[in-house]
Amino acid sequence: MINISEVLETNKMIERENLDVRTITMGISLLDCADNSLEVTCEKIYNKITTLARNLVKTGEEISREFAIPIVNKRISITPISLVGSSCCKIPADYVVIAKTLDKAAKEVGVNFLGGYSAIVSKGMTKSDELLIRSIPQAMAETERICSSINVGSTKTGINMDAVRLMGDIILQTAEYTKEQDSLGCAKLVVLCNAPDDNPFMAGAFHGVSEADAIINVGVSGPGVVKYALEQMDKHAEVNKATGNGLANFEVLCETIKKTAFKITRVGQLVAQEASKRLGVPFGIIDLSLAPTPAIGDSVADILQCIGVDRAGAPGTTAALALLNDQVKKGGVMASSYVGGLSGAFIPVSEDQGMIDAVAAGALTIEKLEAMTCVCSVGLDMIAIPGDTPATTIAGIIADESAIGMINQKTTAVRIIPVIGKSVGDTVEFGGLLGYAPIMPVNTFNCDRLVNRGGRIPAPIHSFKN
Image (cartoon, rainbow, N blue to C red; front, side, top):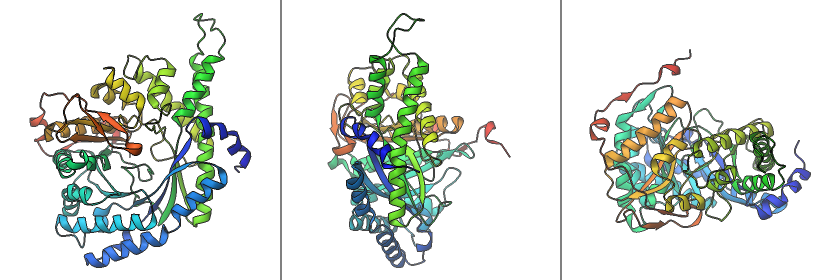
């Protein structure tokens, strides 16, 4: 049982160290909304969302006031829409009609984002999946709060290279459709491998078919808390007899991160239990992901510097990130029986001031970020690239990241933004939690023959476990 004394213990974290509950996300199944009529399907979707989530924002605000815990976002995730619209959508424009209905429902209940404009195509695409995918550029351009995700691979199935190639084209089209907003539509679109069914974070959230009719998932974030704990650790460290310096050794460092993650997760557990009880919706999972913001001090890159690298991207960065991710998970699992989602350290460029500074200093490249994604959550995230990058190059980047996820049995993702009209040396401003980003250079050697082969990269040998 969690008591208020545990929350009071974290007051300093909240007031001084940027601790927050990043999101309360209500997952809603829309499988029972499917109908042969597009009009009826949209009506059912709107009614179900606005009924189940009508008190979501209000409840989140009440909990925030009563427990003095900042709850930044209230969100909704839904059944992948390619499943819901398969009977009534005959052309991509039909899916856009559903997207607008979802956007209207999101605005009605007051959530900031709704995720699940999605398709799971890791082994193959149905006609419905393809129609949804081809509708994404228009849907992202004509809605405000809808997020889209496409899962193109998994450890069990391999990588659907036809879908990967198509997503290279779709990302560029989305950039072109939203070029007046610096290609912002791409910030609401992510391509995944091994996507989890219970992720509360956008843009990759959707409500898996194995989930209950409705659930509450909570995402907690606290990179500033971990950074402060590590600074205090070294400040009070005794001289290390083995090295002769005043740095805490790895045993102490790991314990510090683990204990801090435990406390952060307990805050999320309290919020999740309260939201579940007040909304009458079962509690799903706590996602303990160190999700940074553009705020000074709320940076995963800064934690890596505290661990011991001069800049994110320096030699040793991947090792430091692996350590951080592992200890966060260990601390979180001890604090809650239902840790899920992604639960690790995010390394988005535009949303992390330390990452932005590392790119500006020349310490961090896309290739180094890709190496870092082998050991963290989730992947190449919020990376701005030149708007004239070929679709096949984007597809190649997706294929690389998917291969990392497939082989390592982990979730990986690509949320990349080719900003139309911008080139290396420019900066793009997205605003809010999305921050700003320098345009990063992309390897100019092509991979056309690879991505144009078609078919599927088979699952790795270690996927056969039956």
